Length: 461
Image 1 (tube, rainbow, N blue to C red):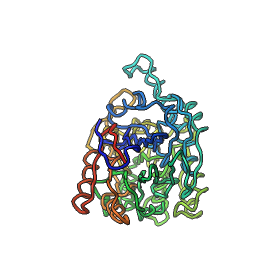
Image 2 (tube, rainbow, N blue to C red; image 1 turned 30 degrees about the horizontal axis):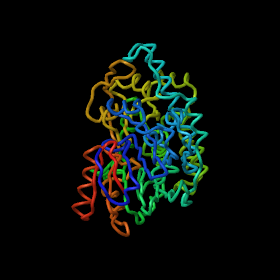
Image 3 (cartoon, rainbow, N blue to C red; image 1 turned 30 degrees about the vertical axis):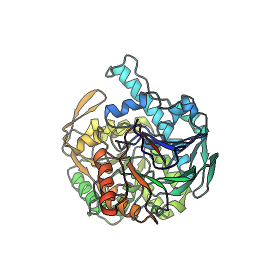
Image 4 (spheres, one colour; image 1 turned 90 degrees about the vertical axis):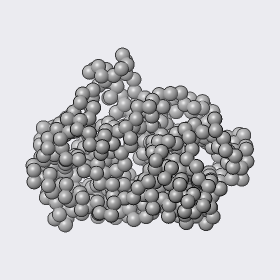
């Protein structure tokens, strides 16, 4: 195992996930007396990455004293139910917003995993004789009992000389950066860093002084386009409606769905798109709507904007109503999870509508390598769904400008504004090229020390 000494040998950081990939964020801080896991994410995308979810956790779950979550997205929280099931007995610390969102996202993740396993067994497209989910909805419900709410800017003691503080990060509701102090050193984890001018969320807090910075690098090698996302969305909705087609919008149930609804409501109010039915076919996203209303201090939306957004869509909870949408035909708009086409109801809609040239599939965020969304971006003319190859002739459009992640310039500017350079910066939570691009820019432009860590690497802090 590679080690690089940067301080007190009694405190180390291990990259159990989120290194060499944009998913599976898991960072373990170890002192002589305490083990703290920052984020406990699920790996997504390529099979070689997904298989890490099935491997034994790199350290015994019962040896971890606490888990600290930056935000609710599954690539940061989705392994918590398995960790608890397999022996973790400590607290899972999260902000109130993250805790509320996790209460709907984790059971939904377990339910979808069970559904996929049952479908694979019924139709025989799994390589396993008895397909099993990574965890069940019941596992997820039990894991929620471990959650402990922690407010922003409220330091929490974890053990001898170890404490952490949640710092607003923008991105989605409840999202936090984590400042962890141990052995007289400070490690700052960005989680997913939001954008300064995000239409929904407030900007991230400026970076304070820290000895070590562990920063996401999702868009470390690229910029968001200058073209306004509303202009792109208006164009694709208008021309698809003229064809009598269906606009499918795979969107993360938390964060991206709200952004899409916000833009659609503005476009409809200004008359820039035709008044066609909009269906929100995601029970999880419907539940998340109420949570946004509980935390008005964390976002830019007032009560009128929220009413306008959620009044726009017809809410679909019942599975039978979801199936009927596949028979309805256009023109209409369907928003449904998941955002990278990795699962959920959106897959049934793609099966129903993806082969028709009148229709459109609109990708509204980052598509990790190995996901169906990434395949579409690469020009795939078919997708493997439920064990069958589904032809794709629908128009495919990507709107990167809707991302809630800071892009390369925004990341660099946020980091460069630190009061003093950290001793070292570790770009993580990005594909290799993106992480290395941010590393090189920090070194060349600022003269800072930066390294892209390896999976399972341990460093001294």
